[in-house]
Amino acid sequence: MLIVIESFLNAAEVKAYRQRLEATAWQDGLHSAGGLNVLSKRNEQADPADATTSELANDLLRRMGHHPTLVSAALPHSIFPPVFNRYGVGQTYGAHVDAAIMQVPATGQVLRSDVSMTLFLSEVDEYEGGEMVIEGQFGAQEVKLHAGDAVVYPSSSLHQVTPVAQGERVAAITWMQSMVPSAEDRAMLFDLDLSIQALTRGGEAPDELLRLTSVYHNLVRRLAQI
Ligand code: NI
Image (cartoon, rainbow, N blue to C red; front, top):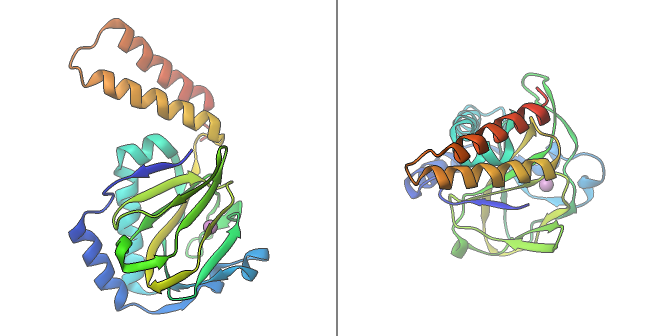
């Protein structure tokens, strides 16, 4: 299941992120590629050891932990510090699957990637090409979102970034270990939670709604691994 979160950052926040990222040190994206992915990854990433980069990564981490849609969709247990990358003309990341087990360099913490998130930091008219293509249950979906929007998808899916033909594509990527490992279970819980939230907006709390809410929490209790 692909979930688009619009305006994860607003226009002013995107602008501030971009300005600060301009001034940081960038390195070859191969620094963080392993195995087969070395063959298909052609991009640059902001040096995670740079103070500005790690400040921005921590800022995003904080926002992720407080974003109701993201929390409901991903039920994050732990989040890998966001990585900022950019693709110039001709750069691309061919079809690949993200590593299942990731180690946070600064802390040595190990997490399983269940859910991936890409936050677009370039506006759609700033570059040509550079679409994200994500393979899902119903075939491949092309994703190119407005600056500040994010897409959340199962880390198990095959995905790629097509070559950038013009301009520059900047994005932040991160991976989450979910309290609920199964993508199918997460999708059902998310649907249930969205429905409960929509019914709650009616302003009344009939017994049926209370029962649905308790079903939601009891399902989480049953499925969550913490
Ligand atoms: Ni990837």
